[in-house]
Length: 103
Image (tube, rainbow, N blue to C red; front, side, top):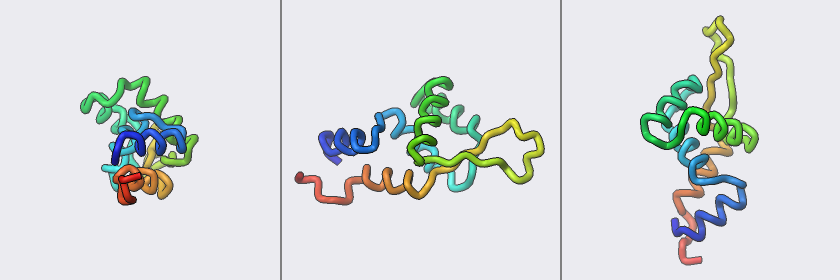
């Protein structure tokens, strides 16, 4: 996708590049995943620090791009689990630029 289309898409959804990268990373996990795993992966890939990742996860939840869950076998209750929502996948698919990029 061309840069101006990316900018328009981000403005339309009130997103930024780091949030896009966090969302893309989450999409690599097909099932609900511990939040800490996402934080660790973002740090390992140098996408964002732990604090920034948590801020971006809050933004993604507020936008409806990710959902928070409790794990059925986790009796502790302190861990958070997340996954990408259909809305989040639609947004990422728009990023792929399947539409005509000549606009």
